[in-house]
Length: 165
Image (tube, rainbow, N blue to C red; front, side):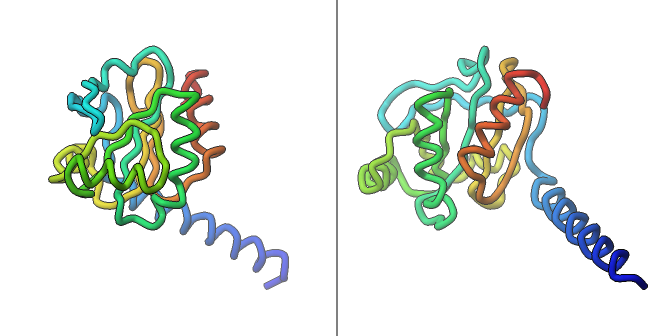
C-alpha cells in the first residue's frame, strides 16, 4: 500500500472515530423543542426558558466539581454579556453552595441550581459540561458535550441566528 493511501486511510479512520464518538456521547440529548424550564435562579430571579425566544440563546449545564467546566467558565461568562444565557449547575449543592462557587470564581452568569439533577436528566445528560444552542424560535439548533471554546459556541449561536443550524 502506498504512503499516500495509508496516510489518507489513517485520517479517514480518525475522523470517523471522532464523529462516531460524538454521536455516541450525544445520543440521549434532547433535540427539537426542549423541555420547559421554569425556576428561580440562585439570585432569586424567576426564569422561564420560553422567554429566551426571539434571539439565539445558550443553555449551558455545568457542575462546581467539574474541572472541564472550570476551563469554560470565562467563555460562558463573556458570552452571557452578548447573548441570552442561562446555566444550570447540575448536582452542585443548594443555592448557597452555588452562590459561594460563583463568588469564589468571580462569575456573573445566571444560574439555576439543579441540586437533584432532575432538570439535567430531562435533557438527557449523563455528564457535564453540555450545552444547547437554541434558535430564535426556541428549538434546539445544536447540542454538544465536553470542552468547547467561546469562539466555537459563538459560531454556533451566529449560525442559529442565520437559520443555518
